[in-house]
Image (cartoon, rainbow, N blue to C red):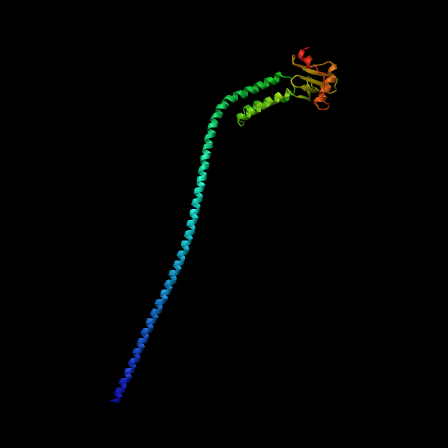
Length: 257
């Protein structure tokens, strides 16, 4: 009987230990589950935080890009406004130039014939004038005549060149000069040009002198008495002597004697 009770007691104790073991195992499993849940939660939280950080970085980058785009839009708006003003000004300039071209074309039709006539008249004036610097003056006319046919020279430039040539001819009438050239027969002489009043010459040996006779349109020899005065006139024109009164055969030429 006693043995039976002892066996029952041991059995009960064993059952209690077994129950405790079962309870411990269950508790440990629950603990592991809880730990796993916490771990998973922490991992999920970490992943979520990483995603939040990544999205925050992307948002910041997009914000910077957005602000950059806004700045570019503003700059483009200002540029377009300025460009529009420039285009409008250019259009106005083009319109003005077109109007001026139309007026210029009308002016050219009137100016070109006048310029051509001026060149023709200049040649006639030089050919009828006293033949001082004759080669230079006629060459200037030839250059003007060639210029009239040049398509790369504007009408205004042609007119300017012609008026410039007329001014040179006008200045000749107020000038006194000396230069060397040849007369008929190839004789080299020193010329004395006194405006358009007289053209005198003297041979290089100073033994013979002459003048251009406007009546006969040729050079004629003068008496020896004029040698010294013509020589002095040449020296004055060459600035080798001080200005002085010189008796030249100007009146003789004008009277046609």
